[in-house]
Amino acid sequence: MTDRVELLGIYDRAKKAAVCARAILDERLGAVVAYSPVPNHEINQALHVAISPVRLFVLVGGVLGCAAGFIFPIYTVLDWPLITGGKPLISIPPFVVIAFELMILLAAIGGMAGFLLLARLPRVTGPPVDTRFTSDMTGISVTCAPEQAAAVRACFERTGASEIRE
Amino acid sequence: MSFAKINDDILRTLRPPGTLYYAGLMLAFVAAAIGLLAFLHQAKTGLGVAGYEHPMLWGVYITNFVFWVGIAHSGTLISAVLFLFRAKWRTAVARAAEAMTVFAIATAGIFPIIHIGRPWFFYWLIPYPNERGLWVNFRSPLIWDLFAITTYLTVSVMFLYLGLMPDIAAARDKIGDWRRHVYRVLSLGWLGTDRQWRHYTALYGFFAALATPLVVSVHSVVSWDFAMSILPGWHSTIFAPYFVAGAIFSGIAMVITLLMPLRRMFGLESYITVHHFENLAKLMLTTSLIVGYAYLTEFFIAWYSGNPFEQGTFFDRMFGQYWGYSWIMFTCNVLVPLLLFSKEIRTNLKALFVISILVNIGMWLERYVIIVTSLSHDFDPANWSGIYQPTWVEMSITLGAFGLFFALFLLFVKNFPALSITEMKETMERSAEADPPSAWPEPV
Image 1: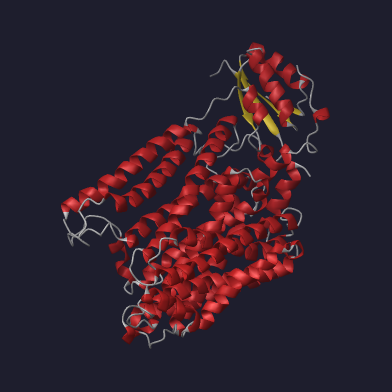
Image 2: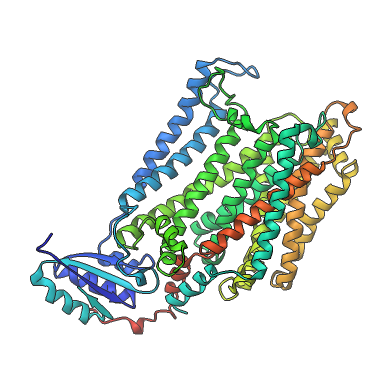
């Protein structure tokens, strides 16, 4: 959007960045994205980060895997009836093992797919915002209206940003 | 210590290696090449070169399969179980253990294919509708194995990759050579945004929660390959917990064996400390006691059952043709680890290295003893006179497996961060010294 500007404040401490993020949101100056080398509790609190819905992907994957683990062997033994060891064709106890393994497998695959979807990965466009964000620095990126830019810049300065970029 | 120093120290391991590394890699490749040649010889000539003779139709290949699956278990224990228990010391050793898990399970997966004799038909194990009109028998533990091993390999690879993703991004932003293109692809464009971290931490927890029961199930299923039969020495209800404990025991021994040269080679002494090795030694001691208890329980049950075949098998195990292997196994797995009750030995890295190698030998022999002594002493006394001797082909393929495993591990640690950069930083961040409250900014 052409009527929005993006400012980036770079911090040497995540706590300072968290204070800045909270102030930006409290003052409704713009939308905030934080960049950090590690997950940070203070930043999450400042941004009011909700519980990740990745758990739903894990749950759906697990339920589907468990169901597949029973349906597939049952379908096959009915498709090709082969009595072994005098056991009934549909022997649930041995199928539990297959259902358990497929439950774990599909839960993990579902979780991974959910993570990639929700985290918007893979991201194929553009270089890293700043290579220091994977090393030791924390960044707060604010997208705001041009008239708010001065207030955002002031907030960066007030909270001790070591570098400000526009 | 700062984030930048952790970054630099760990990414320094990706720089061009020294002579020691190349010598190790060369040895591993030579061993792997010997194994490959032996395998090709067997594929061309037939399984007869493997020394199998009725009733000894499982031998060194299945020994190797069970051994390598076992080795794979400590990675998940360290990365998943200790993560759930919030054991912070795992941070320094988790990455190497996770990588070890993936390579060990991949090595293990080769052996059933080698064992079937006609490896080009290995896909017959996979249940799918086919022109033969047959389905596999879903009541067979060998098919459960296929599901368990495939699941374990897939989940372990995803778990390793998830943990690596932010570290690969760190390497992408730091390494200047041709590998940065590879890192750029493998990091999937990771930026470290709050959104990405939020879903990352959630999924990491779920992976740990999923991998914990999985690790127990996988070696339980492997143990049922034996316990579901009626062969004396195999048909036992304690096999699942006994195998799981043994797997973790052998896996931790392998972690110690690998980490000692790794920290020396890459100068990581300040990250992988004596404290970490002592904790690993404690885990090794605990699992050794469980394994020792399982050995004694087996003998007690054989005696208490009054079953002459069971008693005969266990007597033969300790005093029959294979007595030497059994006593070495018992010494390495039960007696030697008792030394770890001494703190002096737990903190003596040379002693610990030697003990870890002895445990590796002992655990390989345990799998060998379980397979060979039971098969050679079945219900038919006419079979009892023969003795199974692995041929040069089997021993070469065994050597090749070790070569393959070490080669994969060495290539990994030189091209990917051998320690988790993210977790090391998280651990540091939590310590009050690194970021004292006095340094915090005033609220705005």
